[in-house]
Length: 151
Picture 1 (cartoon, one colour):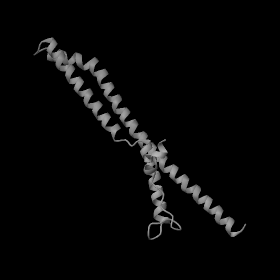
Picture 2 (picture 1 turned 60 degrees about the vertical axis):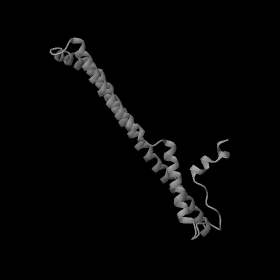
Picture 3 (picture 1 turned 90 degrees about the vertical axis):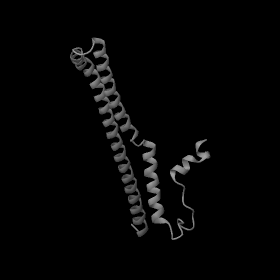
Picture 4 (picture 1 turned 90 degrees about the horizontal axis):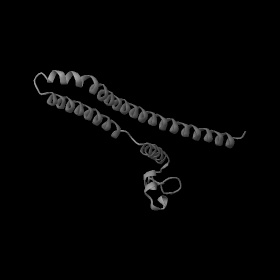
């Protein structure tokens, strides 16, 4: 094989390695998001389990204890409100966990923008131009906001 064919082959292998590295990095981010979703699901299940078992067991015991000092209906109302507040607090905590997760579209955009930024930084000349005076390509966010793209 000649020099050029070896260089082209090496370039092809390098491009393949870059794509594989980007896909691997993207999959790691998706796995991280998946772990966050799993954590939120566990928190929601804990809230549901607390409400289920709490209503069945603790309600009867708490009402019986409070009925020593209050009327039966008052004791029942106090225990019910305590259980509802606990369930609401756990549900709020789970909702906060979900709100902190990054969506898949944002993850892909971030990865592509990082990749494009890396290539711009390595291929641009001193004036910020790519190659032979070519203008840099827009970011993924700029392309997605373009009206022609959305039609």
